[in-house]
Image (cartoon, rainbow, N blue to C red; front, top):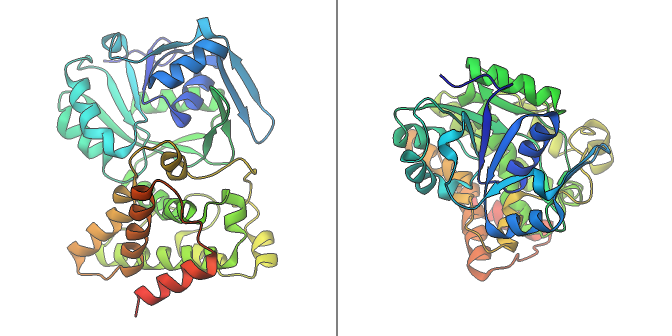
Length: 344
């Protein structure tokens, strides 16, 4: 069995924005952390260390020689807990590489977008305990290895003794975290919020500014209502993530902006630096996760004979943006009209 988190070595695989922030918070608390990520992140850490900041004013600075950051799989066999933070398109390849490099008693935890990554990891790492997880906050990479928490939000991890110990350490490190026995509901609840990722790509706006655009909010409401109908047909109950129950999110989004700002104040605890991870992927020339978010809705709808034309339309627009390598910077009214037309 893996050691307790007080003694364990925690490996962060795919140490980008989420991985570096979560790992850095745990390391600053005193946990042993080993990061695995891309060379450009490693280079920035070698140059100036790992810097963490938060919208609530918290800061942490880890000097270069204190950060064990690697760009290959060396040393993974020493890790007791592995936090998987790679983008969804890379899950299969990452799991296959891990299969020959980690101990069978290491606990693997998926902290990724989408609803199926833990299942992929389980299928390729059958000898390991694999736990589903979810991150509900936004982290942006600023200059160099500076990672900034721009929103409130929790981490959820599938209930398990190791998960409970990790959650205790995360909370002690100032990262709000919980365990859950209903990760399917949690993952679908988070996916409802992630439906905005594609819209953020299409808007070319910071998240806060986009959410203050009433037409973009109405577009998001269409996506959420369509997804809730498919979930109902499939007998899936999404969990409440954040302040509003899933069924109230769309009505809140449709409120006039002045009232939305008051009612949804917690949704707007977003500073001007925050934007979606999918928007960062577009800027950095990476693959889109749209197939694992809106695409998951389309896949579910096909199984239950539900219609999800709005999600399909967003997929087409986002895939076109990634093919061209830039956001179309659509006005909210233009996007809303396109999505409404897709339903007719």
